[in-house]
Every structure is written in C-alpha cells, then in structure tokens.
Image 1 (tube, rainbow, N blue to C red):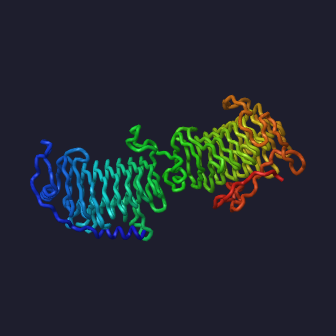
Image 2 (image 1 turned 180 degrees about the vertical axis):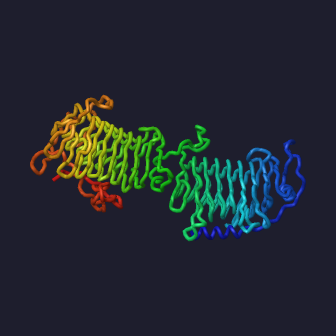
Image 3 (image 1 turned 135 degrees about the vertical axis):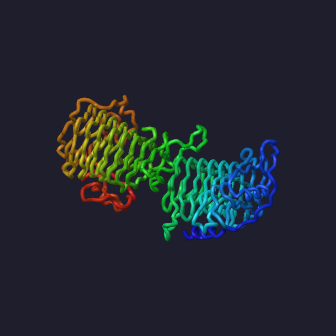
Length: 604
C-alpha cells in the first residue's frame, strides 16, 4: 500500500510541460498517395494550430524521434499511420518521450491508431515513454480519455514505466512485446483502464497493468503469455482510504500461459485473485476468442480458494484430467464438467482426489473419479450440504481399510451417479453421521471383502430411492447401524439382483446387528449395467475374484460376524473431533481441515 501511495503521488506531480516542436506543412508521402507528415515538428505544429479536432496521418515508412520530449496539448485528435503496423514508428533514446497534456484545459479524446512505439531507453524511474496527464488543466476535477488502437509497444527499456495516464486509458487490439519496465508496464491514476483484444507477450515488469488511486479496470479477450511479472493486472486498493480503491468492472475471455513468478494469473484486487478464464488465446489455432470460461488443473483450486467466479460456477475444461488433489472450502460452489463425464480425477494413490471441508451448498456435477489406489478414500466430505450429480466412481481400488467415498457427518446427496467396478475392504460408501441420500443411481459390480456396499454408521439418516444395486460381492448390500443411532428414513423403488452376499443374503437393507432384512421393493433396474466380469477387476485386499472373501468376517463383541467392521477412528492431530455431527441439528462444521484422514478399523 505504501509503495502505491508513493507512486501515485509521484505521478500526480510529474506533469511537466515539454517543449513544442517547430512546424512545416504536410506533404505528399513517398507512396505518392497519402497526404501526411514525415517529421515530428510539422505534425506537432499543425496539431497546435488546429485548435483541437481533426485527423493527422503519418506517412508510411516514417520514424518520429521524440528524444528530448514532444507534446500534444489539444483534444479531439486522431493520429493514425498511413500504412500498416510497423510502418510508422515513434522512438526515443533518452528519458523523455511523448507527453499529452495542457496546463490550462482538460485534454480528452486523443487517439493513436496503428503506430509502433519502440526503442525507448530510460534510466530515470520517474519518467514514461508515453504519459498523458489529462486533468492538469482542471486541477484534476475533470479527467479525459486517451485511446490506443492497433498500436504496438515493442522492445522498450524503462527504468520506471512505459505507458501511463492520469485519466482513462483505452487499449484496443494492441501488442506489448519484449518490453522491460522495472516498475509497471501500463498504468492509470484516478481514471479507468480498459483493455480489449490485446496481447502481452514476453514482457518483464513488477506489474504489467495497473490502475492506481481509484477507477475501474476492464480486460476482455486479451492474452498474456511468457511474461516475467509478479502480477499480470492489479486493481489497487487502499486500506487507509477506501475512496481511492480501484475496482474491476469486467474480466472475461482472457488467457494466460507460461508466465513466470506470477502470484495471481489474472486480476489481483486486494486479497482476491480473479483468474483469467479462457482456455485458448484469442486468435489461436481454432481462431477462438476464448469460448466459455473454464478451469483446468492449473487454476481450479486457486480459483475456488480466491473466489474468482462471481456466480460460484467453475466449469472444468472438456477433457481435463486432474493429477493433483482439490480442496474445496468455499460455500455456494459448483464444479461442473464442460461436457459431462469427460473431466475427472484419475490414478491417485497418495492423497484423496477431492475433499470438501467446512463449506455448504457445494455441487459436483459430471465428474469422473477413476483408478484410486491409496489407503484412505477417493472423495471425502466434512462439510454441510454437498451434492454429487451425474458423477461416476469407477474402478477404484483403495487399499487397507480404505473406501471410495467417506462422509464425515455431512448432508450428502448422490443423484444419477454410478459406482461401478470398485474393490475395497471396508465399503464403497461409508457415512459417519449426517444425512446420506442416494437417488436414481447405480451401484454395481463392486467388491467389498469385509463390509457392505453402503454402510450407514453412527447417527446417519439414510435415504435410498430409485436406485439399482446388482452383481456386487460383499458381506451385505446396505447396512444400517441401528445400535449407534443410524436410521432408514426413506426407501422406495430400489432394485437388486445377482449380488453375492456372504453374511446377510438380503437384496436390500440390513438393519443392525440382528441382520434383519428390509428388502428392496423395485421390480426392475432403472439403469443398463455394462456387461462385465467382476473377477476381471484388480483384486482388493483378500478378494480372490470368486465372489467369496478369502479372509473371515471380523467378529463383533458378541462373537457373531458383523456388517459394520468399518468404524473410522478419530482424526488424529486435528481439531475435527466432532466431524460426524456436521450438518446435524444444533451443530456446526469444523473450523480447520484435518491433518490426517480417518482410517477405518474393526468396530469393538
């Protein structure tokens, strides 16, 4: 904050009037067609004599050397190049450059079109190549607008800054490439900064774009690649004087890749980071301008943590395969695959794929969870309300006492989800309290050696409707631990067949230690289960692939086998001792994440 205040004060006091160049008349350019200006003095003189207003064309193949300083002090001016980009060059070999301003009036509506600014080489960190002080003539009670269209800033070396304005600065279709600024590349003070369809490539600076001391920032359809900068864009805030805070009006369709040392791959606003959202640079191989905003492994976790989506929706780019864990701690978050079931987490073995902690109203939709081989769980929740819609949990093989899904007291709902081809020792789904709702889902061809397919422990309130369970191998299908307070709240139109159940032969709910059976009431399965051989899946601990466990069921304290050998032990070295009660009446979610995951162990 202190640095930005000093910089703002420095810039506000830096409006010095530079000498106006001498004049001569416009000429017929060397192309034999264009009437324009082939030197700086004549251009400057005619602008002064115009009393404001008009277009001034620079001849193709012209270099305007503003070494020592040049000034534009009139409003409503358009300076354009008579040729293509690179045909009209503005350069300076010292600390001074082009100054836009007037001590006697507000300067506004000055536009540069098609010019290349290159060769600036300053040693003074208080100067800029191009600087517009639009409000000097009104003591900053009125500010003006300066626009650069289809301009290029290439190969400039600045001890301080390259392009700046006190007032509003607009960039449309501009290129900034191979510039080096020790402070900021492009900045505004007091006014807005608007960037449209522009490219920032291979620049180095502390900050590439910034607005200081108020104003709004808009960045759309722009690309930031291979830059060396701490921040790509900064909307500066002032803790001591909120009236001087800058804000973000819009950031959309922007792309970043290959940027080094960047703390926020988007727009930084106070402690927040609004991530750039495009998956492809405008003008890329498919000539896309970015398409719908989406996230991948490089930015999803950061985006959720920083709250970069104003709506809470984080669309995962089609085809994204996560290889690192994602922790969700932000409420009202939706993670949705751009094309359902074409995004997901695969081949995890050290850490869970996804953990939702201390949040409410979190929805995961259209995601796949495949190939987990670790000792804990594929997905875990210790939150409040969490919804899984149209998700697949397939071919996961947690080792030891691991499980596919672990609910630590949350209110969890599965809708149209598939659990297929998983192999575990304890269960496919374990719920330690809260509410567990399974609806319109399919749990088939799973292997569990020492428990049930679904195990509801402690005070879990279980509801299962319109769900199919077939071709599973387990001690029992769905176990409800009545003795610990678990209950079956709702059960309707569920169907089970061809399950190999070695302890409680019940295609339905096994109610407590008595193993009483509440059978499913459905007459057919709602889902088409792929033809597959259960034994073809990699073996879980103790599973031989024959449909029967190779190890005996773990005995209960009474000496009889039990379907509930999977009571997760307390979470060690962490304050989440009340996790099973999350979402229950009169309880609250834990306030810090667990430092270790619960390990299921035999009950009793």
